Image (tube, protein in one colour):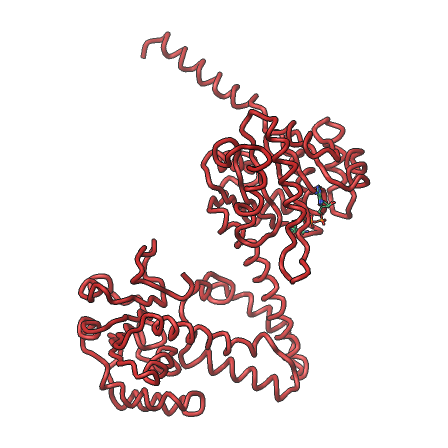
Length: 469
Ligand SMILES: NC(=O)c1ccc[n+]([C@@H]2O[C@H](COP(=O)([O-])OP(=O)(O)OC[C@H]3O[C@@H](n4cnc5c(N)ncnc54)[C@H](O)[C@@H]3O)[C@@H](O)[C@H]2O)c1
């Protein structure tokens, strides 16, 4: 290589590195300085951002402006003091000034339970108005980030229109909009900020995604970028899951005590199973549970609790919740108006001929009650005496399925194409091998009721439906 060009390239490289090094970090305003906002403010300043906190509570603002923590939270006071002494952190009651003087605004006002049990978004609306008015007087691209826990739709249908109305600007063009849920745990919030369980960025435009990814890059280099609505719901789903775990463990504890069993010994073993217990397994929406174990054992535990005089409302709710999934499948078929229905997959899961308490049998029983003609295919099932024996096993659990099991040979077909040929609707309860090519032979107008979500992305046609999608 020519020496001169080589030198230029080397110089360019150094300049690029230096340029990257001196590039100023975005300035961030944080509106709402409670448990979430105060921690975000302090932690963002610790990453080198100039930050301005804003709140309507003068006492909080005063406290933070002096570098004092308004709440009890490990390490927070130290970070606030450092931020103020380094001239990176300030606080004000003037929201509009905070927005005008920064590039990005985090909104972390309270969203308490409303009178009707929902989510009170009044503080978000009030803040959105102020942000809109501030943006009206600003020319630069500004990013607004909602951090409150809210129902899906709040960011784009409640906050965004108010900002657009009062700023006269358009989201995605003149300013960016983002939902970025907060996963901190009070008590370890500062540590959680610096080592987050995940970073979720819900956006409608790539420029905003980049701004957020840059902010979080020192603590998480692989943020999850998704739609705003998914990000909003993830936060709720996470917390409902945590609550579910707490109630589940507590029900196990209540069950253990009268039997003099150490509940912690039970759960210590339970959590060691990261293959089935604490894992993604069983955690994708799909069809109802069934088979020879789950329904039987859920019933047995409910029965055990009742004989011990222990209330386990969550465990007791599992069978009704499962039944709802079966009812939904039947309702979807009914909505199609189909008179002939084909079912692909009859056992409770693929790869087994175990029909015991398969929820598909429940669906068949309901369809037959409605005089709907059923045909079915399952590569693992050959009707015969062993099937009748399986019924013996669930004689007390599901006596109403006897009739279905008995007439199984009448509606089971040798090949999937035989099952679907005349069908007005096809229920897919298993993602069988070769399914896609089989479905090509269906009548065009035949509706697919997909209970297991065979495709991604989902077909955009009215002839396709599912329970959770
Ligand atoms: N606390 C947590 O651990 C946690 C964790 C994750 C998410 N969240 C969510 O974050 C949001 C904030 O929670 P929090 O616990 O920090 O609430 P908080 O009640 O402690 O703080 C809210 C702050 O917003 C201020 N505020 C209200 N209206 C305002 C306005 N118009 N302008 C400026 N400031 C205003 C209040 O004065 C208060 O200081 C909520 O949606 C909450 O559900 C909280």
